Image (cartoon, rainbow, N blue to C red):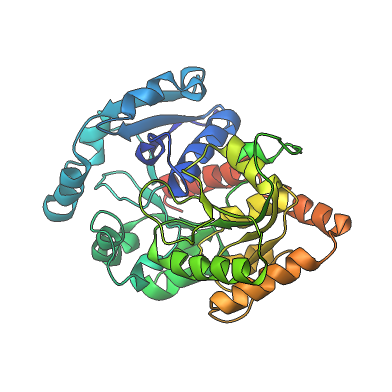
Length: 370
């Protein structure tokens, strides 16, 4: 007998902003892979709530051309919606989406609407537990809601074994309820690209964000130490966005860039430095390796898990002095083509179609209550 159709609710709200990085990128790239590779008996109700960017997804060719997807757009104030979920237990998913047909709901950005159907949530990291001042609509929301809501979910997905074990331990979840499903490499980094004369050749490229666990102040001090030790050293920072920054004079700070331009930056750099204290996966590490550029990062969290044997690690907590010394040492080495090729092969093994295939299995299990 033919299998009945499984309708998967998918909250793509975090992918609506064209400048989205991290979680937004995960949400967008996973959806792209799901729509392209899901079997015929799996369909998707794609939900977007955005005051400013929701309509943009109506014109996204991936959705326009997908016969297995339907888009629902709402324009509700996000902060008000989250507060209603926390305090009133509504509006429920079925009201927001306009259907009770969903066999399972996936929340890829960690936000958990109340729902009558089984829920699957992706927890990217638990860094918010160690933030001194978590944002009310991000880390603060997760701190408040996860203790009660995660145990009620049919399945919790994480991008690494490190995060999976942290979630099990923190929230007392059984091993079989938490699934480590690695993310994929964004499409812009799959092709072997060359240099581009429009971009400067940077000796050091720091990748960070104005987030406490990324430790931008450590990166700023490390870059200052390197520039003092090597007059003329060319340094840049990507991922910061707009607004004031803590980086030394002479460091070029890029706004958030599309993946195609970001890949060019990586390829034009001598070494990439990541000073983050905790990563649930570590996109910049894989992106650097895919572009043939060596990476300096801490040996901790998921960075150690996905970068072992390929990254240059700073041990322990690592201060600015250690990161600067390690990065200068990498710059002084002769480029090893064999090692760069091995790093690229390793990065290319992380494919979104593999992530999507595993997610479909989890959707089925959740919908069937197994």
